Image (cartoon, rainbow, N blue to C red; front, side, top):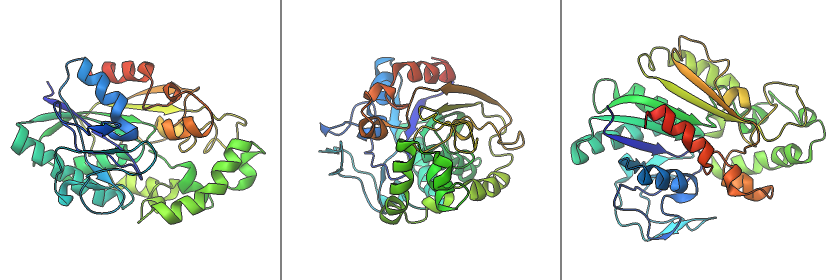
Length: 298
């Protein structure tokens, strides 16, 4: 039995700390990643928290960027706030500290983690960091998490190239913007979402998820080609096979249920960029939320 659900946003995401009673009063209450899912879970009567995250070290008081927020009523210390553009293991240390905070201040003894994008990696790093010290992690749900590489990381690592876009305008645009985006928004994160890095990192994570049921959700709206399968189909940032953890070995991922949303994109940022309704994003669609409900057993 879980005491609470903790939502963990991903790379370059800015998310305020929220609890069942408190959230940002202006703008999107839990940021542009977790607002809709948080509202859904609260409507189901589930006790839900969002882990604070920002671009760079520090506290989360506002997000002045696209679809941001302000008027955050509860601001937690920097040491329990994820640097969403930093290294995965460092984010895991901060998230583990946040979970210990929930245990000490909110009486949370057992949690389910729902991570979007790199939030799934941050969650896995936190589980390893926690060990037996902190609340028990009973379940993990990942939405568009790069279990085995990402479009951004693999392009920067030369594992995929412009030629692999096969002339698809959307994918070519994503490739063209990858390097400037990484230069502006990474303090180590971009280097750690390549297939090359994550396969080694996954090996080091063997045993961490033993006894924890995992649900991995992948999306693949962009499907103009079929090769290489490392890329196609993809959601704008993560391939379908990586989001579903199809090629992650059982020693790393012993108990997993996989789900596919082939007509969805990674986030509302990608939905907006390509003229799609926000409900076509993994973070905003009630059909995806139903999968989360099933994974949580609610």
